[in-house]
Length: 454
Image (cartoon, rainbow, N blue to C red; front, side, top):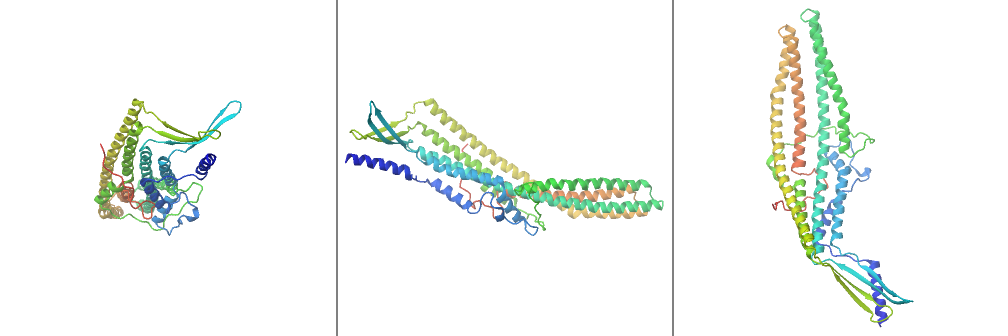
């Protein structure tokens, strides 16, 4: 019977080691895995290119945004970091691996052999505390992933708008080159009839040559902006240049107050800072448990001679009070620092929003002035100056000045429209944290308290 018990103990040990065991997931782990599965169902890092949206002129800006998010290496890296953080919850809440032990006594021959099992048992509350820290860290990693998605969308929009309005600037400057050719021809005809000197012709040529160089520089800068556009799409330099959408899509006007409320509700940078506070709080709770001893228990079986079973138990002695105090103090300092960073992030968000909101109002006023007043009036002034030059009432210098004024107002209009689009993208994506349609993020982000414990 005793031999049978020994064999059963050995068989049980082999079965446990061979088949493995499963722990009990915590509520936080289950929630984290549900969130991860919800995102993973819609997003796979750097998928097969054949599964990506098709880049074609007929496709809209939303198609470009979807492609950029799915193909972005920065988003893929953030997603992998989040996945690793979720898996670490299981690691932290699990018991250490059991140990298979052997003890033998040998004189002239083997006189005693005692196989056994030993299990380390962390002190009460230590495993849940470690799981709580890992769970809070996984939330922080999710918000880093969402930030990467929003930053990728912002980079794509910025590159898209800069490329479109570069083409607008080139078009305006080429149109002005044609006007300068007309003015040069006009100056030659006036010179031929004695109403102007060759100086007017040279002035027109100087203006034309300067503008020609400007157009050349703008066309050359297109390669730089195209490289930024490809990078935002996750394309490498050796891949074909992507086509721009045939139809330009402008951003609708926004309600600034609604965006500020959205920003404080789901800005991922702010929520990440709040999650770091929760990490620090969980780490402080874990540090306070360092004064609790850890245990280990085991059982050995004597193969040759009775008594057949030898129980074993161990306990750590947390006697180094200065070490325990230092661990708690360090965790408390980390919590204070995290709380201060959260407050700083809240202040910065309000300041950034105020600056972007002011820029938006300023841009709106500038565009209204340019498009309703300055550009139409400068065009009329140019026509009047042209007619006055033909009649000898206006000199060529004033005619060129009217031409420059009209050109500059048009370029100012393009610059303000560029600023408007990028400003709106900044407000909606990086300030308010509103993801683009179809983005692989959680509709309701993990709940974290934005209250600072300072």
